[in-house]
Each structure stands twice: as C-alpha cells, then as structure tokens.
Length: 127
Image (cartoon, rainbow, N blue to C red; front, side, top):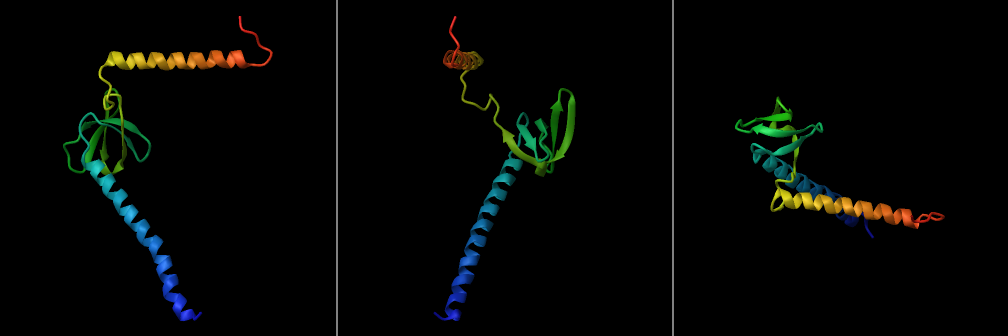
C-alpha cells in the first residue's frame, strides 16, 4: 500500500480523539459554569481547595460569601466553587423522624454484622 494513502487516514485517526476530548471538556466547563451561576443562599458547597462552607450571600455577580464556621464568613470568587454538596435537606426524606429511624436501622445492621462476625470466628463460642 502506498504511504500517501495511509497519511490522511493516520491524520484522521489522530484528530478524532482530540476532537472528542475537546467536546467533553466544553460540556464539563458549561456544567461547572451553570452550577456556579445557580448558587443560592443556604447551599453547601466545596471549593477547589477543599474547603466546605454554606453560602450566606450569593447576590454578587462574581463573588459569594461562605460561612465556614459558626460566625466566620469569608468571601470567595464564584469560580472557586467545585461542587454543591447534597445535604439531608436536599434528600427526599419526608420528615426528621423518618431520618432518625433510618439511622437506627443502620446501627442495627452494623450490630447484626458484628454479631455475625463474632459467631463466625473460629474457636469462639457464643455466650
């Protein structure tokens, strides 16, 4: 086969992954910009540096105020927000009593698992 016939094919094969990764990056950038512009008071967010805080004031166009500890409010550039944390308020739980009940069942599962592990330990007898 002639080298001149392979050259266009090789060029196409090299540019396809570049084109696809560029599209993916643009989509991720759009999603990040949409997240940063949709922040509102009360949202719990994580910054690019790993700091977790609650949005106290999102009325400014380029900055937001985050409460990082009770009574400690800092101002951040919106682009520093990496993700919004899903809190229990965002979850579809019906009421706080229901969430307490689910915690109890989790504790029961852990206790049951520990008891099973104790029972299955070789050379150990149950009392």
